[in-house]
Image 1 (cartoon, rainbow, N blue to C red):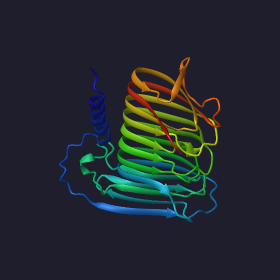
Image 2 (cartoon, helix red, strand yellow):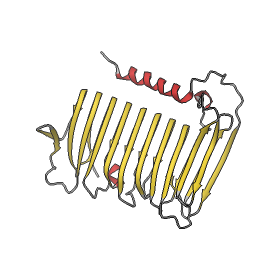
Image 3 (tube, rainbow, N blue to C red):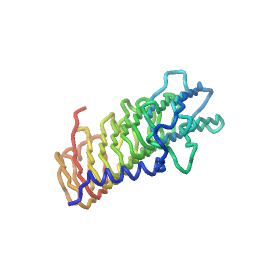
Image 4 (cartoon, one colour):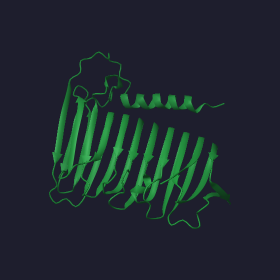
Length: 292
């Protein structure tokens, strides 16, 4: 019988190899750690297009204290990476992160430690389009209280938490989340105030928590490879789940099957509704109901 845990470890190793470039130099090579800090105050920006490219380490994104447009601090090994900080005021585009000094070999994981970290703080007052690409390590993305119009988060071999702890200050067009060989959790997605959610997962454990202050109807499209998926819904939300799966178990506690879909018992009377389409290959899908 196919073992999903073994498959996850196999693909995790492959993902790490791709990120590291399979470097073979001794781990005892000398390291030279540096810290770089960059920040800017608002100067009439109407929007901010933020692109984060962070290969490996510990990454945190959170709201900034006023009056700050953005603040970026990174601790890095200058022997293998260079800091990336570019801001174009005319277009409102900000790029931050790291670049490998050796593009052929990539970033060597044997030289990544707790010292490798980055911290990005973003303005609460300026509308944001945020695209975040994260390779390996730990990421804590706290977007509560920001003004996120569009969000895309793509992770590799990592443990990632994306949270909307407070309602989004603007309505989001779309929230797009992607995870490779990963442990991925999204919290408070209802607070994103998004019309559309999209999630694509490779191998791993995924939790999608749709709790929050709902003020609209929305759709969610979920594609899973191998692993476990937990869907958490507030009891007041009307939920419809359409499932297309291969060898996937589905625990639809609290839902009623009608035709080819599963419905929450309050679907007809709920003020706000979420339609979820799930396409999964191998693993398990569980539904949890949460109190608000």
